[in-house]
Image (cartoon, rainbow, N blue to C red; front, side, top):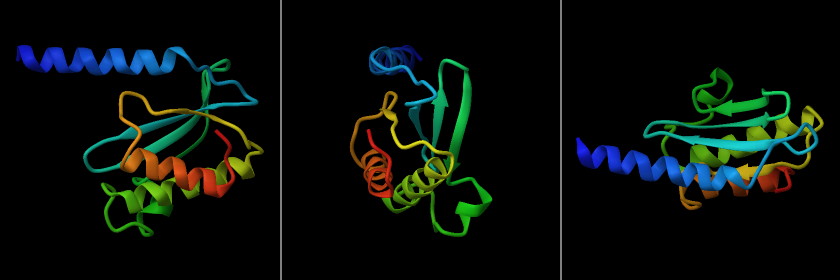
Length: 122
């Protein structure tokens, strides 16, 4: 139990360290990535207003039929493309990338690359 508390504390400090440097506005919202063992999701968040502008996840019904499994890089790249096209439809072209406590590799990097290819600028 003690080791679990230590690991959770380290994860929380990493998340604070990453998020300390960024703040989402309506002109440049924060692209927040959530990565679980089975799914990947992301949101464009306006921190000034405290609301989510656009979101996409492997749990969405429109995305669920495009991906076979939500826990791989293929699914993350599909989510990146979906969030980019939804953001462009909402009039958002720039965002700041918030990886949270996750490292920038694997599914997180695949999502970011696909979002950049879709037209979002970080």
